[in-house]
Image (cartoon, rainbow over all chains, first blue to last red; front, side, top):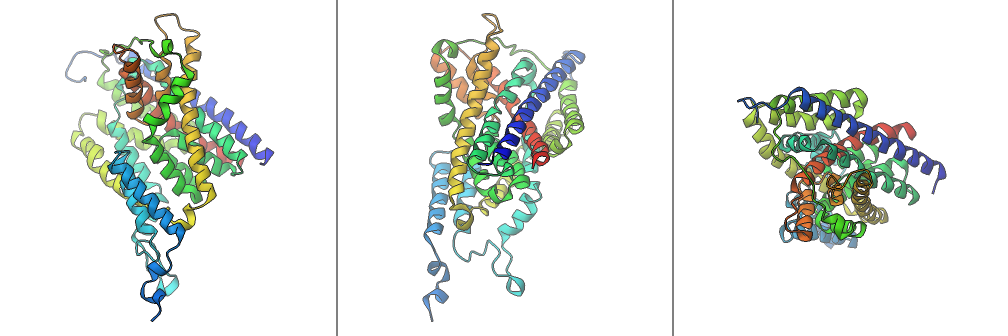
Length: 47
Length: 381
């Protein structure tokens, strides 16, 4: 086992997990925001 | 005339070829008898038989002037090396996904992030097992429970491991009902498994919202991580076809004909990597074991994240930790499994809607994490 590679793997893990949570948090904000901006109205254009 | 000249396929058959033909037969048996992902396991299983008969015409034989090009090599060059097949599958998947459950309880989207935990833990373990960083990241992505993402990541980072990684990714997706329940039971109490969740099942979403969602996500993902754009862009393109409301025929085609056609080609082309020479190796067994490890820790990541969030929620608003396990990409299998487990604990506890929401989050999460790995790993190699 190469310790230098392991250190890189740990760093990628930290960045990767943080990255995916940040992405999802942004998506969450978008979902809430878009839903508030364009709420469902009962007409022919909506599902 | 010598026997090897008369019957070269029989004369040059080795035990490794026989093992791989056996693997092919097992995959066909799983597909037909157990109905585990038959659309993929059957073509992969049959392809494994095709490519493991010595001097098979489906693979390129000879070299130079005597070279005879095999059909599966042509398909592999055209569809896998260019990533065309998995990306076309993403259009089909995008056309199949209804994102509206996410709008009913958007916070469940976060489980799509938490349940990617196993990918990274497996990457670390693979490094400890002696794989290099590119190979380890490709092995970890098996835990995404997302076949096309696994193919794209391994094709770019570790094409030498494409065969075992693709087979593991697709085979384990079908084993979700076997892998997830024991892990969930181990990490939760009966009381936790009986938690009822409030969801606004009648909440409706405007058409404008559903149309804007794929466009905004594509723009955002592209601006933050351009390397993830092929994955997310094709998925969201398929979803836009579905939601725009003016391409219903095209949406149906993407969901059915495109999905079926590309799946046939993808399955049998993946099998072209399952030759005895490349597949019957110790590293294949290690990859298969690490793949299970990734699934187990993805499930654990989702469940433990739900338990963590429950520390901050008041009684009555708590999340059933089983729903956390749906943050993987295996849709809708994982949601169905959790719904079934919920009913087993309490026949009046319907977890399907929150489970579907978390599962849709898992589909987005797996694509995001695939893009992040493609962006991050080359920076460290």
